Image (cartoon, rainbow, N blue to C red; front, side):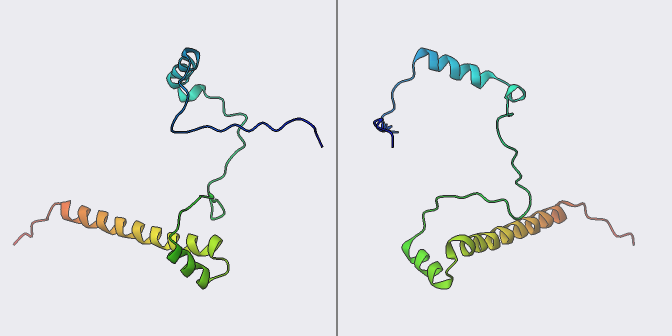
Length: 115
């Protein structure tokens, strides 16, 4: 084991230190940079297609909801929450498509029936 002391830093997000003029200048230069000049070569490729693409999120859940999910399945953390959210998402997408189709139908010109 190393005898080097462990250094811990704490940043108070509500009381951040003011930026220096050099830091402000660097941020302004970065903000003015077009996206085409950003070097992404050190970032590994990401594949967000397919059903295996996932994002882990810290998700605050009410205790009652947590207890209900836990009682439903021992895999509640990984599968049940995602399953419920996916069902809600698909229902919402279907409702939006139906609303769009209804709007388009209303906006379509009415054909006059020749008599």
